[in-house]
Image (cartoon, rainbow, N blue to C red; front, side, top):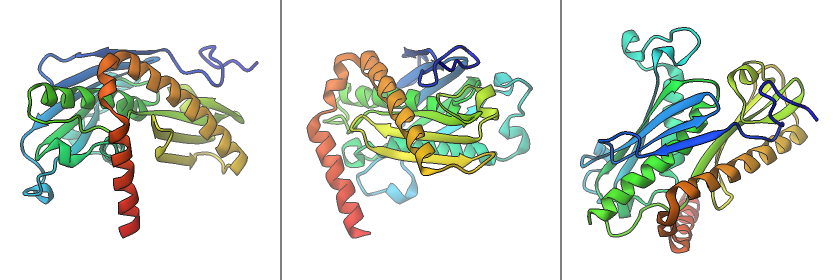
Length: 264
């Protein structure tokens, strides 16, 4: 049996801990810990929508991502000190936004925006995937607050969403890479999925070498295993509220996606 740096099996997640309602003032918030990676995810409801959504009666979901200066081993300057958002931060927050928007019915949300802020307070690999997994719970709670206040009539979420990293390190496919594994990975992949078993995004990069179809299939298999476990953790945290994500919502969202594919 191959044991890793932290004595995990190759198909084993790091210890996951999620604290719900972590920030007092946000409509939704969590602290998510995956091993030594820690991210605070908050969801804020804004009655203003982007210009392209004005007058449509539909809402929007967007995300912002940042790292505290000493979330890393050496101080990482704030983006504001460079007067622009780094390319990495832009890429990650777009990924988070796309992942969460894919399961939201904007017509049910109404003409309002939910902003997901993901702030990494300690980084040890997998910060973007932890942000998606935690960000979903914050989004869910923000939508629940709107529902409980009578501002929306139905939960506008069709599926649970979670994400995980996988990679090939020293020729071995591994699940949920820590920083040391990630920095030495031959191949790095981030996978985002729903609880219906469908993919939202797959990002795969040959960091030090190319990879073949068999290796890619093994990575996808590992990712599916890890995401299944993360989805169950989400269900446990959300409790009975998760039942508001009905099969009807899932079928309606799938129908919308099929219609979009037909018209493209």
